[in-house]
Length: 465
Ligand code: TRP
Ligand code: ZN
Ligand code: CA
Image 1 (spheres, rainbow, N blue to C red):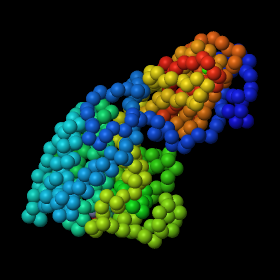
Image 2: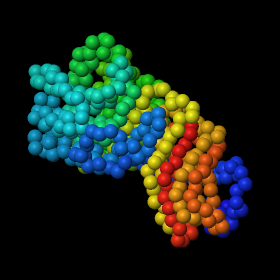
Image 3: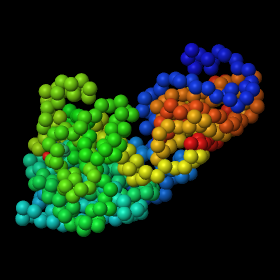
Image 4: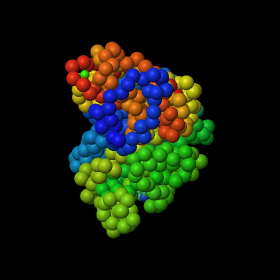
């Protein structure tokens, strides 16, 4: 029987005991992966990053917040800027050319405005001056540094929007998202934009060489993003460090998107100098000049027998040379990695309470509304006796149908409608056996008012893990 049919037609006697309120509905997800999108604050314009404390929509008492959805429109706005810079500077952003320096200044301006501590690291290669841009997010454990980076230079043949405006813009927008979230991670966060990658990873090699051994040892991981919006995309994950690899694989597994291990020239990007210095590396790649096989087209869509990026290193690597879906997913995957890895591995203690105190109006006799709680930093599954405390103000609580949604969308019915229950408000603690579900992710309280006249709102709700 569908829950809707049950809701509309079945009059329910008053519940006798608390345990009777609770049962597993085991319903299919209404929208797979919707949880990821629902966690987020509204997209912010690309230029509007302002550092501030988190305006906690969801406040977890001890755990970190979940990663935000990175607005792909913002990432694309950065790519448009890089395209304009190339167009105004002889069509490229290559090492030693004015388009490179202008690209650097664009990125640096955004980071400075967002509260980063930035520095340019100058180096000389092929007789020409180049720069890396290093941006530190204040705070975190200086002895545990998580780095993410991308090369910002193009080849001289073109504007380099997929290679590697895509990685540069995705990392930039992630850095801005860290600022918007007011993230206070356990680890120290550092971002890098490298020069002269196209001449043989010169900038990143220079950076790694410049670090004293003691500083290198503090870098717990380096994540590299070089070509993450290929127009005929594949989803490749670097295979070096198991923890860094699985954080990306987990993200894609949740979206039901298969990944492959990156093999298109291992060591062909800026992770190589880090890896050679003994620093764990990870990263994402959507493919360069290799051709997509029939099997790959089968699982990822796109065109078999064609390169992942037919404009690789050529003049047509423009802002038209981007697959928005790949860029969007990879940008979100980066956020997931940063939020997960920088949070550190300390598990919040059992009994941690996660709460959402944002008031949500429940439309009279209308559609469902949801209120999210982001659970992060936990290991394993949810408790067998997950406590769900619900505080709803309503003038006739019998109107209300309430479900708890697990991060995978599974619904657990907490309360059915009951036209004879005329009391005010729902202030109740339910117990749900959620032991088959992973703890981490976006849990939702879903409420519907199914009878006309009386109204109310979700005041707050809590989960105890
Ligand atoms: N910028 C790299 C290059 O020009 C692109 C690339 C090719 C790449 N193969 C790769 C990046 C594998 C990462 C992994 O060579
Ligand atoms: Zn390249
Ligand atoms: Ca009503």
